[in-house]
Image 1 (cartoon, rainbow, N blue to C red):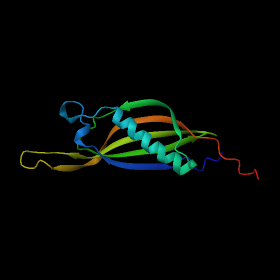
Image 2 (image 1 turned 90 degrees about the vertical axis):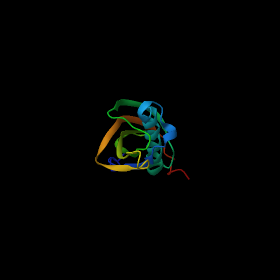
Image 3 (image 1 turned 90 degrees about the horizontal axis):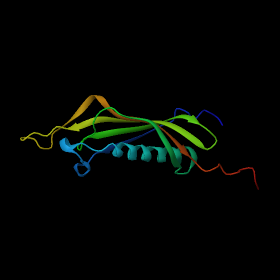
Image 4 (image 1 turned 45 degrees about the vertical axis):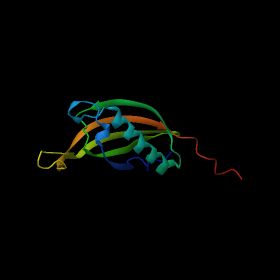
Length: 136
């Protein structure tokens, strides 16, 4: 299979609602990032293969910094390897904005420059066999 698609990137942005705060300090559980990885992987499969694909495995998941309610996240999937039916992707969650409420400004927020890398992982998805386009 051609490697011309390797390097394809899909990016989503998401605001983390306060309803997802799970721990003290408005922390969000790590599963939230993994669900976001599933979303960008699904779009990658649709873009590349016209199918949603199925997640087969994660490897090397790393939680590097907290994700909090009120954060604005940028989630990326980058295709790093392509097999006949498998697609290996590298994922990252970057916190690009964070709520910074005060008593005087409860809706205050700030853009983080540079963004904070919160979660990274490598994952493998599988897609159905390509249709046989040579059949009549």
